[in-house]
Amino acid sequence: MKTLLLLLCPLFAISQIPTQEEEEKQSSFDYYLANPLNINLVTQIELQSSLLFSAEQITSFLAFRKQIGSFQSILELQTIPTWDLEFLRRIQDFVVCNPTNPSWWKPSSSEHQILFKTDWTAETKKGFTEPDLRSKTRYVGDRTNQILRYRGQLNTNLRVGFLVQKDAGEKNLSDFSSGFIEFKSKGILEKVILGDFVNQWGQGLVQAGGFSLGKSFESIKATQKFNLGGLAYSSSVEYGYYRGVNTTLKMTEFLRVQAFASYRNLDATTGADSLGQKYLRSRVEDGFHRTASEISHIDAMQEKTAGMTLIYSSLILPLILQFNTVWTHWSLQKPAGLGYKKKEWSGDELKNYSIHIQYPYRNIRLVGEIAYSGGQQFAILQSGATSISKKMDLSYLIRFYSAGYFSPKSNGLSENSENLNEMGLFLGHSYQINKQWKLSSYFDYFRFPEPKFRVNESNTFGWEILSRVIWEKRHAARGFIQGKWTRKENQDLLQISLDGHYLKVKSWDFHLRAMASKLGSEIGYLVLQDTKWDKGKWTIQGRIAYLNTPSYDTRNYAYEPGVPYSFLLPAYAGKALKTNLVMAFQWKREIQLAAKWARITYYDRTEIGSGLDLIQGSKKTDVTLQILYKMP
Figure 1 (cartoon, rainbow, N blue to C red):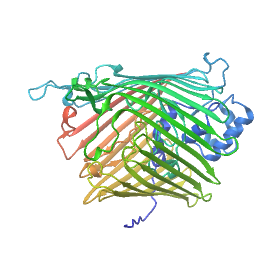
Figure 2: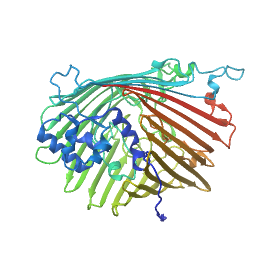
Figure 3: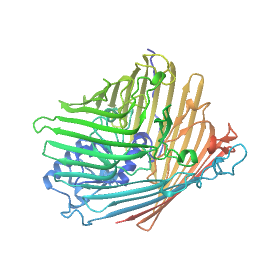
Figure 4: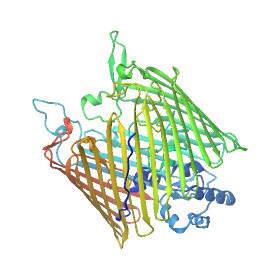
């Protein structure tokens, strides 16, 4: 095996704009901004999975809450050991204190949030032009994307939310709708969700609906998932969730039971055999209903699902055992696959089972899950994480996924997009060199026992190595340099990133990033500069980015600033200059207005996109407007 040697040197630059670790956590943080943690009901697992708190801070918090019973004010957090004022300022937007309310149906300290966002492309796409002799197919709706979302915390126990949304080209704002009512308490009936929800069970081999970092330089979090149970869902993503009822019962101090039932209509393309019997060709998960063809896919297949998990927490040992089972039935049969897909699951009914175990041995946190999906098809994942010293953390993860394993909601750590036809070993390392310097690395080896997409051979393999050195001078500056080497399908992809921040200079922030990717003889690079001004009621942020990649294979990814509560991680590919400007204004206490203007100008093409999304010209301009109303 070749050796990759990275000469690591510091880069100093500027800002509080989310990059570095915050970039990979941004999606999770956006969720908790919209759904703050109630300090009277939040559990240890929820604190751990939020990525906001250290293990020491969680232990101190739980011990303090147990001592006082319940919080009456958010200000009481100041008295918790290890929770200093700087930390409290960082988390103040992610936590709330709703005192316990004996009458769960009565409003108490209610909070309501209504958000409306619309965006569109200024240039005309082909789908919005008049039909011509070559093509009569056009979009049925206007060019705007629109989202209307409501979230309300009526009291400590009761939370509600709903969302309606349309994509550009769709006709009605209610093209997609989602909603939930969630009840939580400290009694036997611990949680009930009516409406839309997801589940996060064990390590995600059967049910994985929560936020996951995937492979990350933060290797401890990448290899350890937490059982969050049922989670209310109101995302604008139109697939990957259940609709029905989800209930959690706290039977005793050591036993919890969660059960759910769901019925959903799904979009799909269908076919018919020689006898006229319908079968499934493919699931349609993009949520687009813009043309007559796409509209014909609506509700073409029905899905019935029921599941249950038993969670045993030993009162003597630090042991947690979890037993999971899920039954799913579809109205259409998936036929047996051909070629590399011939070993994949087929049928119209599926039963998934798994056992999950969590056991800290000395200072090693061991977790594992083994899952079964019928036909002797298994998925196995086992990981461990430990602190060798105050400065050094180590982690590992071993995985094996059969070629025929299938669970529609699984999302264990994997090189493939699905948890099948893979075995691998992930090793992570983090070392705090001193107060200012930190080194984080991981090595991931993966093997594919059977042929896969674009690979006809069996037992192909590859690896991925990442190393990041972080420098930070508290309250002054921080930066990192990162190298990544991916070997797959007999190709080597080398990537390097340099990023830096200077912290606030009065009301100004500045940020600089440079990235490069090399695949064979191709080299693609990206250089971007962010500037942010934040004073009083106004926040203005701008970016200018230059990208130059010979093809999409050498693309680079970077977090892109957007209006509040939005998360963008686009691929930068082609030869172009991209600029954007984001403005937010706090109008009165309850209302926030925000707008974004973004333009990309290509120098290597005269048309952008394809099909009905084709734009004639080298420029694409996107405009976003958002209004947020908060009512205490």
